[in-house]
Amino acid sequence: MRITLDATPLLGPRTGIGRYVQHLVEELPGALERRGLDASVGATTWTARGGALQGLPAGVRQVGPRVPARVLRELWRRRDVPPIEALVGRTDVFHGTNFVSPPTRRARELVTVHDLTYLHHADTVSAASLAYRALVPRALARGAHVLTPSAAVAASVRDEYGLDADRVTATPLGVDDAWFGAAPPPAAWLTARGLPADYLVFVGSLDPRKNLRTLLRAHDALRAGSRDAPALVLAGPAGRETGLAGRDGVHLTGWLDDAELRTLVAGARALVLPSLDEGFGLPVLEALACGRPVVVADVPALREVAGVHAVAAPPTDADALADALARALALPDDDDARRARRDRAGLFTWAACADRTVDAYVAA
Image 1 (cartoon, rainbow, N blue to C red):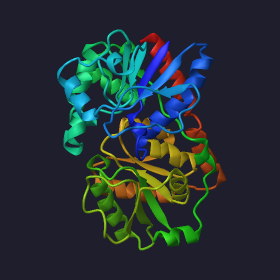
Image 2 (tube, one colour; image 1 turned 180 degrees about the horizontal axis):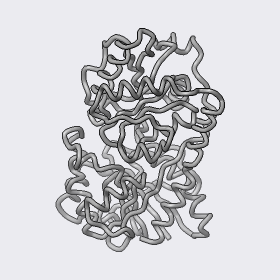
Image 3 (spheres, rainbow, N blue to C red; image 1 turned 30 degrees about the vertical axis):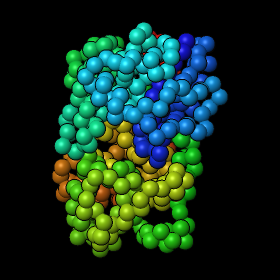
């Protein structure tokens, strides 16, 4: 069996989707071996600038030419050409890992739909993401099987598009082992970056969907009620949200590498993810692996991931979010509490994600 997947999210800094694709690619050979399948794995990228993939595991090779993603998406939005076999050669399975699944001649077609923000919160996403409103239905009309990062998104996709249960498979994400052993940063590390010793942390892109303006209002309310309230650190790549910098008690780190991000989260009083919508909420799982409390928007996927360890609040209510932050700061943080959070995170593994994905490849 020949399997090909879209590895474009591996190019450039890794977002949450990039980390999903990275771990899926790394785990697929083992998952195929566990199933006793004789299969080869190809990884293709859609970019005109050149997309040489580094560090592919044994058994995974890069395939396909350099083709601009924008051109391909516009063609696929309107017509079922070119088929993926014209780009990568014969394949039995093609997995579109990031909302976009190309037409095929004979290959089984699968597409990961990470969330439905492009439909339910269209005013918060980029123009490129709005194209999913046409691309996803075209793939579904061709019979594509849908993968989702959570059961919550699986249910939403089935309801939104009227799909039978066997057309959608949830493949929950995992967490790196390194998060379980992450240590808080030394004082010198924080000082060198202009960061405070006592802080709450947000991790993610600085985009409108992440609901950062409401978070800032909630943080202001928290500080107004307590002069000892922690500062707020926003950790992640730049986005389209404006007006975040220059506020008292708020610090922006910009992009951090994996080791820096782990130590920053491990030293936080709590992680907060107040997004209007999420497909999984990987930062929540990673914070739990560090043993840290988490504050989340009261949306289905975040409740699914965090379970009883979530302190939740409606995402559009700044006062409720401020109260949730205060409650998280008052939670027990002894060895038993940290162990319970790590145990929750340990339920999610990248190997299990890959196993469920391979099951879908076979059954689709």
